[in-house]
Length: 234
Image (cartoon, rainbow, N blue to C red):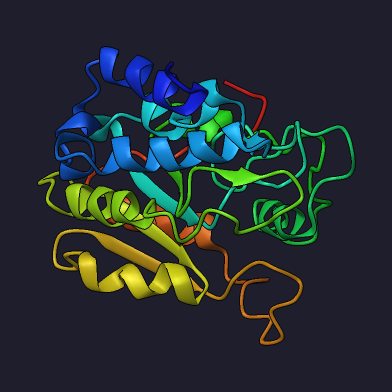
């Protein structure tokens, strides 16, 4: 009997996504991880996000469409909060603190930040790959699946974007994301690095770093149209 994650993987494979050429999918790693996660489901764990959203970042932002990359850690561990995109929040409570710090960087100097939505789907649809290091977790257990092997996908996705001739920009937030700078060809692609947006980051080196302005400036300097970072608007 096929488990829900294996079924989601089969559905993603049927989409003929360019991402399927990655060794992660072509050489069995994806199947092994799906089996492990389905094993946890069989044991009674509630895996997040919903199976249909596990590969959503890759579905909404195919490799040829990537203009920017933002790397997260893993989905929010509360049911209903995550929708398969790094940092994106669709829950019914107040926005997570890290996401509020991120969105505050979109507001012009002196303006009040817009916290009306945390759904980052418009970014993904405009070429921003919002990829978590682990595509799944378990309810109430942040980081539960970080060691299952998902990170191979993250590394290969970063390398695939780096291998593109068309310039893209990588927004690397925090030590884990910045560690992947070694996988990026900095002669062809932009790197906008800063601290992690978490309020627990004692260095507080994300607020005021203006990553979105810097990313757009780099894209324009290299002949690409800037990204519309607004949410809920066309």
